[in-house]
Image (cartoon, rainbow over all chains, first blue to last red; front, top):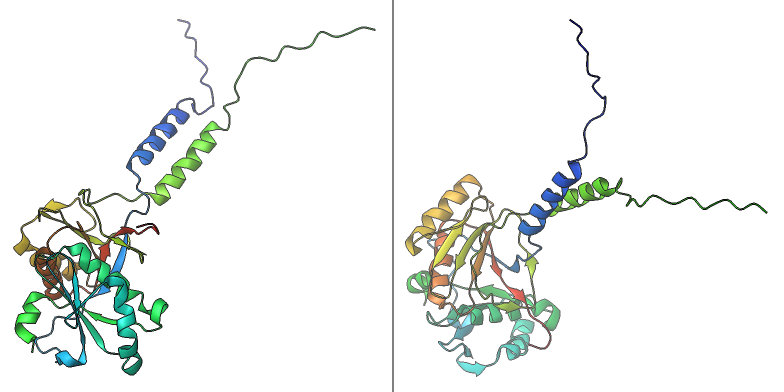
Length: 144
Length: 140
């Protein structure tokens, strides 16, 4: 019998490579998200059974009321006025702690606004503000 | 003078470099690709300062209604009850003690939910949390 051998070409078939490549591109384009994750960093203190006791008169207390209004050392104040109020106090004592105490029903956004403003102390009043946000459990246990 | 008839160019679109371009695009997307582990829809509070959250950070999200979802940064987030945040965070920290956490909470959520979460994270010895926010523009 006479068998004819078909000649096999020595080329890698690449005609579908572009199709595969574009399918991969479409997948990555649909699933990629760009830098949507940014925010304010906050270093948590270690959970300690005996934290340093701070007398209320040694600190500045920023209370956030249920509607989001502020009381700074029991005086009504707007967010943008806090750093001006703090400046003379921090000139005297740069380590003076500022305690943020939001009401349980206050909107979280109001706390973030205050924290954002205080974090800008270095740029606005040339003092890094020592911010503390105690939790309700800590307040119940250690508040003087 | 003898004029030669102009040669007709074959109507072909050159596609030889298309695969190269496609693979360059693939490499770009592969390098910038991060899988979104939490797709909870919330209205984030606005801040002027914003820092990039490290990749693979653990996520805790809170909707306006107080529904809490958590993800260890590797798997998709799942709904967990408020009292389980501590055990979730402790498990994550036990595996990776310096793991960062991102708190993705709606700006209108009552602070009591955030207080409970922050307290749980403190007890689990989480060191740094990121309060996710959106950019505050000048006219706001």
